[in-house]
Length: 566
Ligand code: C2E
Ligand code: CA
Ligand code: CA
Figure 1 (cartoon, rainbow, N blue to C red):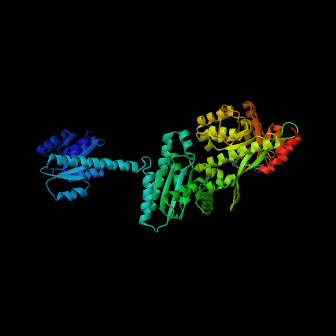
Figure 2: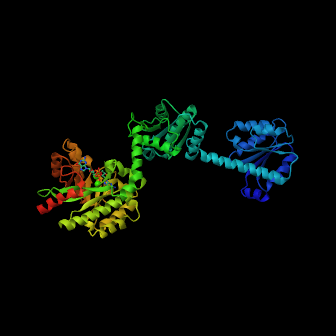
Figure 3: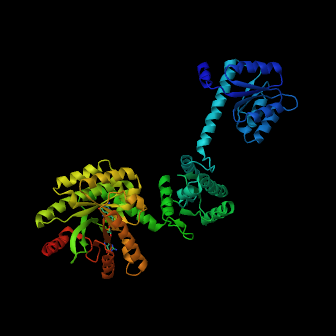
């Protein structure tokens, strides 16, 4: 016991001894002196003064019950009225057994009876009480978010489970609030402004859950998770938050998105239910009027469909259900357009769901990391195909493969690509890599050095979806690129408005500056083709020439090209 006491007391805490009898006060002080910083007071008023002066550092009060003028109960009473003082633990000093219950009820932590027991016992009680209070305040500190006073995520999740256990039949809703572009708000107005916004929203949420008998937490900085009994009109909260923000910070900019999962399915585990609400929340695409979305049947079906794709992906890979389609790219600036290369685009030939377009599964596989296995498979297939065509037709048709930003994060990405090309007996110059502009914005340094390495070996790098990312001119000029692939968006209306044509001219200027070629994709019409040619675009890809087609069908383009002899 003694060791334990000493261990706890390595750090000297401050203890206040309150007793009107000189001898008692001295005895206690003497007993505590070696272990604590001891303060003393000989009446209630003095005690309260000492407490207020030391409120942030005082670890414990030893409080005599019977004192003239203001007794121990009254002191305790005063302490309980004060937010700061009420968190300091009090041990009552009393000679009456009957006073114990009353003091405990009034908030005392423990009591010590006079005449004093063995010093070790008293010291142990003091030390244990301090330890208990310190641990407890630690828990409360992590339990709630200091900025908003709402729960932290883990506690919140356990409260959700507790709420379900208490009322298994009660219908519940999940509401998620997310502040639009919060990082931008922080960047523009500063962190303290951002904190103010969060705390105002937090206040509204707190009021709301108190009124509706729910619980809430703040998650990931700018999200608020709410679990409440079913509400007819949960949108009212969004309105309340906007009013609050406009009233308090005169802020017309901040917009909140709200995702609602009404009447949750309690057979789903808790995390999953919140994922559903989050899905709804993320489906909101800005705009004041449309800032609320409900998790609904369509969303549920999409989720279930994607879940199925994820489950079946491994099997599909091993059974060869993924097939590569090829779309020709034509060089258009010198005389008759001729086939210059192709882009490989994956399709999933599903035995039950039919042909599935990549738009339905690429993002899903990117999110769970499976994309790498698929791309790796496609890269091998394509390299093999290039080699096969070369042997069969005696000419080389380079093909570009799509590289997802996730692939670029793989450690052995560079070795992998080199190995594929080498094993397939083709040259790096016959293998092109399409990397979307936005891939460069994350972990740029690491990604750029890998792409640089590949370019150095002779691989052609095409910057895909150019114009949709956020790279600055400054940044682009340092990137390893051979070709810019103008996003479909530039092409779509080029024949309908002059402004889009001007945009294309700007892209051409940039390309000239960087000394790279330009591919326009998504070209469907003669009119688009004409204008792009006029603007100086080098290569055209699109339905105008052909849709993406299976390898066998693509061979007709190679034959045509051979006959042309270009
Ligand atoms: P992307 O790389 O921008 O590919 C161009 C998309 O435009 C293709 O869609 C193509 O079929 C389509 N397209 C081509 N010409 C026209 C046209 O004239 N009009 C219209 N409206 N569309 C045209 P697809 O094949 O559905 O692929 C969609 C996206 O999926 C691709 O966009 C690419 O980001 C991704 N993707 C496709 N295959 C792969 C792959 O093997 N790996 C990875 N990581 N992503 C792939
Ligand atoms: Ca592409
Ligand atoms: Ca593209």
